[in-house]
Image 1: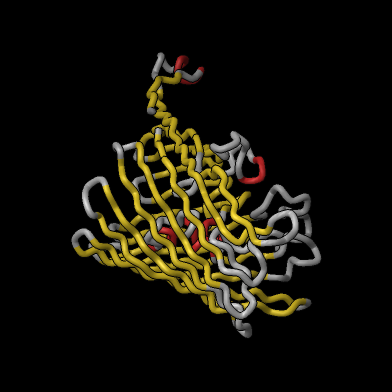
Image 2 (image 1 turned 90 degrees about the vertical axis):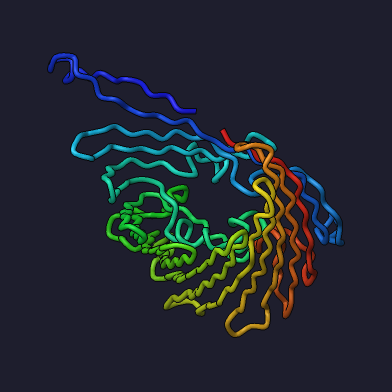
Length: 352
């Protein structure tokens, strides 16, 4: 839904009734599905099957407002407010934030944009296009949720130069929900996040790369730094698009043991008809110095009922080896230790 209206300020009235046009867009997504998982611990710790409704399986359920004001000379004031929610319960997402998916204001020109507020990190915007499932619930995100991270208190620059896009982000405290999550006097490293990214898409071949670094969110952990470098490539050939992605991770701290891993993924997407598409992918985490290296497979079928409504079927299998404990929804989900897991989601998505 888009509503354009005329806003007259006091200064404009004093100048003779001139009026500045402001464009406002109301948008949203509702995505709900029925998920079935095996090898979920029951009350006694034994393996059981769980079926439940789940929200945001392809796209996170959300509603939001975005708008602009023309300032003249090709310059615009812009804003974006985006609220995530769980469509199965109606509860607020992103740890209860009102606008947890995004909240920022800024200035934009024809090719450049600077914004202040809560933003997607550079991995999110520059790496997710190289996942054939679009980073659905079963995707590369299963292995690393920070690939779709967000940062509070952020300054971000975005530039477009024909086929090349570039971005840079600096956050004074990426998690404002924590009591001491950042923006602390005398401790600029607490909660600090910085990132850069670029994407080059001249035609059938597209390439993206992003770097992200996060520091610990307390005085004690501020010297800890989690670093991620990721790259992706895709190639379109008729109705088939091929994808490959890689993410390097290293966590270092003077007081803690270092951690490192490599994540690889790849797959295909096939647009069988204008309404039906099929995507498949596999992802593998190689944990440095450990045999705990999980492997996942995912398959996604989507049927568009219209331009705004779709049915989908999403399935995944997580294979745990060497003591890994990955569920199809990630490391934080419950799974019987040492087991593999299968998951299937059938759902409907509507955009407005």
